[in-house]
Length: 154
Image (cartoon, rainbow, N blue to C red; front, side, top):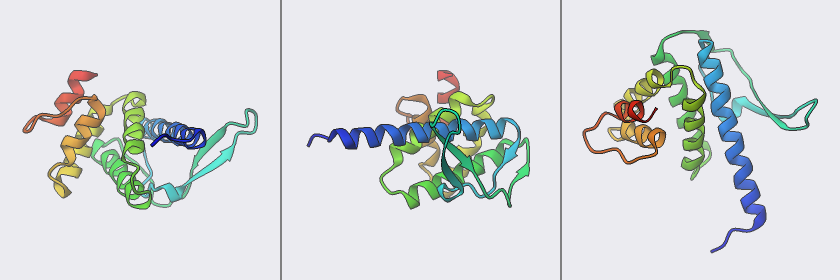
């Protein structure tokens, strides 16, 4: 079945927004700001004053705090992932784009991805393998450390 041009435009726009969200989150984490309750309900779309381009605005920093710990940042990404995928079914590819943009924009992506893998694997034994595959662009071999795969690719 072919996608309509409208559907293609929508998919491209959603991909752009997911990537932008990943870049913003990486920038926040690089400044050691942990949101604490990051869901898509805490993200607003706003027309840019100068360009008219859509901007993303993160809101509700009531549970936010300052932390340099990769564990805290990994949990922040994990909370976003769980909320993202449960609220917006069948968007795994979009979250993958978000995570890749995060890794490409972050100053220290390996430490955070490693902690994300640990958080995922504590609730889902396959979770860490998925993160490694998403960030590296390759298949993760069973028993191979996902963070090692990412490290080799970066």
